[in-house]
Image (cartoon, rainbow, N blue to C red; front, side, top):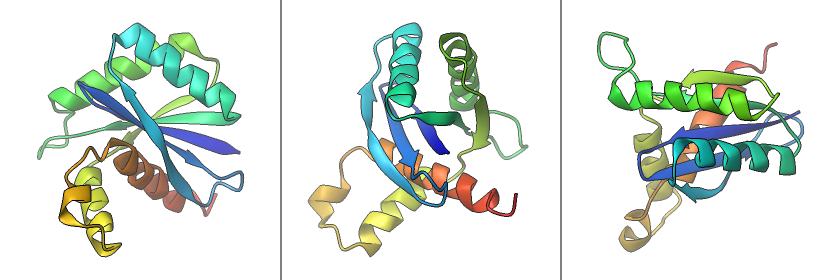
Length: 138
């Protein structure tokens, strides 16, 4: 089953997709933010177009383990997304995914200029790979 992951941001929404085996994640693209309802509709559309069976939405937390402002916005987005699709929508801790995405670009030898761009879809892939690695025992 393919899984679509969402790295929700205020300006851009990063997407990643797993392979059919649920073992590997890859960046899928970035959706520019328009409105929560239209953004959710686009994510639901992408999930359907790629035959995803589940959607994962990344949520960030503060040091106390509570959702921070961005995390609460992502949770709100997930609720709107649930109204746009029949697929299960699951929340997943996205802590440090952007830093991990940047580190992955550095490790891959990307020049400094190419590292400076938006990492939303790469962060979504890191988030999804973390989810997949955690769920391989199931």
